[in-house]
Image 1 (cartoon, rainbow, N blue to C red):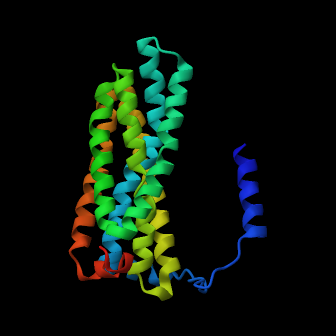
Image 2 (tube, rainbow, N blue to C red):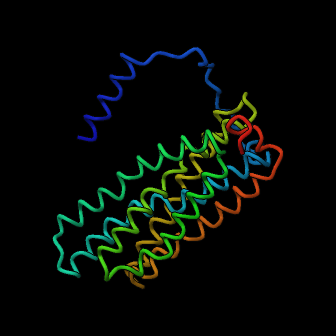
Length: 234
């Protein structure tokens, strides 16, 4: 089903999508500009925010479904309900992304990313402690699922706006590569802690990610470079 959906998307793009009036030439990737993307203060802080976000996001998506299945099983609740809840936790992120995108254009990218990171970090801090109370764990996990991915698109938007326009492709490639590389560590570490220390502690390892992200986006908010984002809305 996933493969068929991807094929359908490709056909829709090929047949129905046409470049709009603001479409520009693709920005190429250049190895020599990779370090420039990190030396630029605004781009660096936006990337730091993204890395904090990515430390949490994929580990949350990977392990919250397992957490809910085990929580429901211990309480004697149906496994099907746990799986449906896990689906909802991930799916609700779509609504979060729409909400964040609209608010970011109106109120600024740093404001939305900070709010999203703070919310998801708080959920990461408490979800594991609710293992023995499945309904409460599910409720918090749904909030977490909404917030954890809501800010995702804002970091690439910020880097696109803050980077030298000649090298946007390089900056975005570097951001994506570093972010997904980081997920290898957080996914593995969360699972290891769940096995060895239990769920009450497992998700706590994700909290530093949102904290680092909040710190980075707060710093970005008060830099002159931030005025280039979202039409001057920081």
